[in-house]
Image 1 (cartoon, one colour):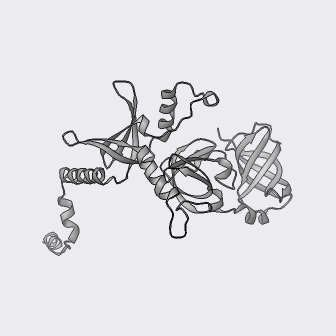
Image 2 (spheres, helix red, strand yellow):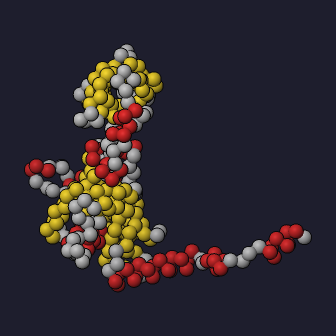
Image 3 (cartoon, one colour):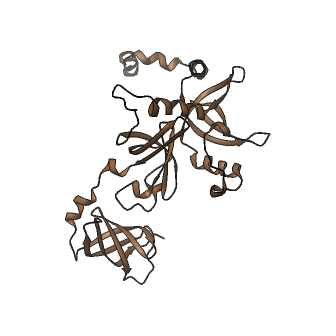
Length: 308
């Protein structure tokens, strides 16, 4: 009896009919949306889900838009590889394949170029979507006479590839590389630990050169948006003080340590008989504070825990 009562008194909400939608009707709705986008030249955004070779041997990028498979030929991906003596990347298709591989999982803007209603297949262009965005955000101006993306403005960017020392970002149709030193005021040994393909990040525009939709370069950083906490934290740091830290990087005998008190530190020697390595947890003694560079200088007394 109580069960029956529960059934009667449970509230029937307005969105109850949403559950009646079948997978087929959902797919029909999305297909209708794609057809509209094709007609109105609306930019759609999907995920780079795969790389394939056609029977003719050319590369295609597979983008998924709400479960609909969309094909973008490599020539329409706007990878912009310079081919000359100074940029000899070897075989072009191998290089293109490598770049696409690093971009797997990233968000891609595209314009629908062709549809087949029977097979519900879609062919699209990333290049045309990027050029359209470039016109709107870099070349068209607002009431103040400035473009939307301009120097010193903080904008949202997409992470499209990440390597150890660099993050590749797409800022409204323009790709740019942000080096590790511009990603954070903290020592950052490996950008892959903090950034992922598909992330949305805030960047500050440092410099823009926009001559035409085809010729736009942007320089940006992440660290000036985050701010420098190390300066404030340095006040907690005392000469002859001993602090725990993590080794972020090692370069030409110099060990870069991020102290647990939130300070960047440099060590030129290690008293532990073991060889210090990246991500080792260490004990660090401060011998000097370099205020100009905002780093603590000292030595590693021992390795607390090796990252084996």
